[in-house]
Length: 197
Image (tube, rainbow, N blue to C red; front, side, top):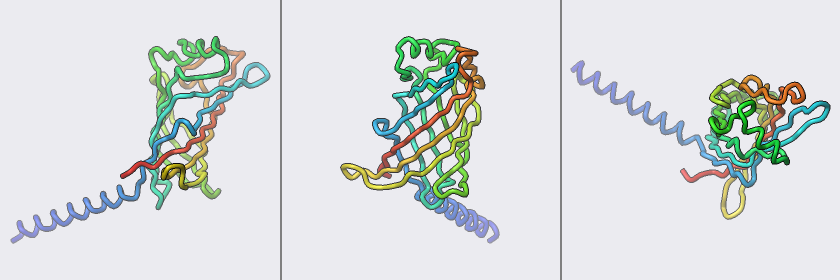
């Protein structure tokens, strides 16, 4: 009798756990970044002015919990060779080993580890691991939810803006010193398309 009772309890617990997992999964919506309507831009000090640029090729997925946005997640990759600073010569130099060393490390990766709400509505602090040149460091993004809504041809969209400042030397990027500064201001705008579950 005790054995039967134990089996029954174990089965009930397993059923409840499975149901809880399914319910949790059901709360998440998957969005794919629309590269054509998103951007990854940066600026960095050059002597007394600033030079700007962007990365043209990137992709990523957001797992959004609409009931509790702090449970959301994002993972994205950026292709280093797609960097564009409006100078062919400079862009080629950025591929070299004193900058991104793109031949060995052609992709940078960001994966969020924590989302936290701030006192400002629809603003979040997103912490995550950023990997460049096979070096992984924790970074903090200031993220704003721009909204959810209908797009073209029945697509359902989410919009986000994120900003941060990085010290490039933490990833071994030391080229151009001292003419080129170490702090890089980054602005990311995302339009993402909800995927069918």
